[in-house]
Length: 290
Image 1 (tube, rainbow, N blue to C red):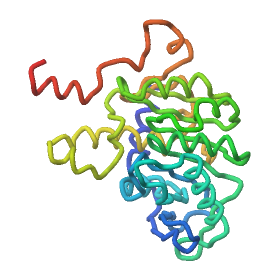
Image 2: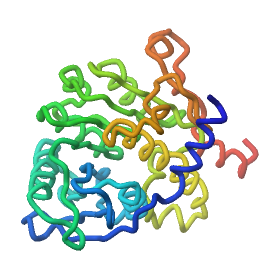
Image 3: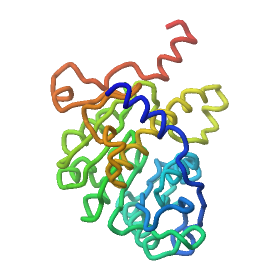
């Protein structure tokens, strides 16, 4: 199994077989972008992407293209970008963008989004918003949450009503570890939770001027290399129904730098598997000698 997961991880860590076309969601009345796998079998599964707080789709271009290259239509609205977004409105905007995309002919006119295969994915606040939307719709086939943060209304409380299977990625020692823990324990349907030991919660963002200025770009690239194959592999296994990648939907399967997290691990007092030294703190200590 270890050899198999290593090979699978390496495969989906690279771009998939499809070239990617970019479209503007503006035609729907909702700002944002849609990435379409060129020459993919149609209709193609669709993934609605929700960005983190104060971010937007332009912060995730390579990640969204990566998913599209594996055969997914990726819809990313550029709404609710301010300091005080309304989380429920954000979920409504994501839902509307998906619905508009389902009605359109995409890319070069040869691809349509499949209304029978709809997934949600998001980072940080966007992961929480994806949970809100999954609790409102009955046609969501998979949810992928990357370093989720809590929302208002509560994503964790809504998780208790959701029947969609989900992938939860948390960062070892992340400041939002408790939010990930709450979602894990509340999620009603099948859940795969992996703790990423070499990832930073904010590291999935591809444009971060502060990090670049202080010379900490390398941890971001490690986060990209760890998160992208987990997202693609899980969505291929669940949303696309490709058994080749079934290991990504196996809650007990281990991958490089990704530790399976179980209910028992989270419920055992004094032994929280998420509460380890954050990678950024380790890096800081290496510079300061602490």
